[in-house]
Amino acid sequence: MLISEFTVDHPILRKPLSDVSGIKAEWEQTYERRDEPAQMIVWIATDDFEAFETALADDLGVTNPAVLTDVGARRLYRVELTELGRRTNLLPEVLDAGGVLQQAVGTNDGWRLRVQVPDRDALADIIGFCRENDIGFTFERLYSRMGDDGRTDVALTDEQREALRAAVESGYLEIPRESSLAELGDSLGISETAASERFRRAVKNLTEQTLIE
Image (spheres, helix red, strand yellow):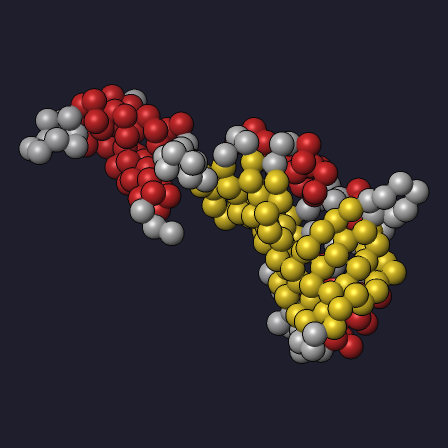
């Protein structure tokens, strides 16, 4: 399974996330019961709840807010999704793609999501949904979840995998080296500079996903 992290400029709570400085929204749950509007449960942390609720009243993605819990600097709200909110709701798209929404945190920069997806095609479906619905999408990173056997299926591009495989097969990684960077590029059908960039990016991704938390 792959873990994808990305930021979206989503209509839901866009107004308060844009207007209220330092705000933080933490998604808890979205659900829809028969014959009832879709609803979302969300924690809000802010120093100015009056400004938040003023902006919330003008938000196009949600309506009918209710405070469920008040713990001072944080409040738990239940809001109903408007037609726009339901139409652009990412959760059904994530579920249809076989994914799991693990976390969604809203700040002045938008909603940052962490989503578990079965493969790259599932992520492509989610990105396509965002594009179709004019939801701004900024990709952050993609990495693999470690399985029960302790092994990790590292998320590399096909070109990066090819570069690493060619480096091993050509002897580029041997000591002393049995091939040059130019020869590595020739085996890949690209220039020496392009081979260097591809190899370094592959090594960087491999290191970040296996050695760095």
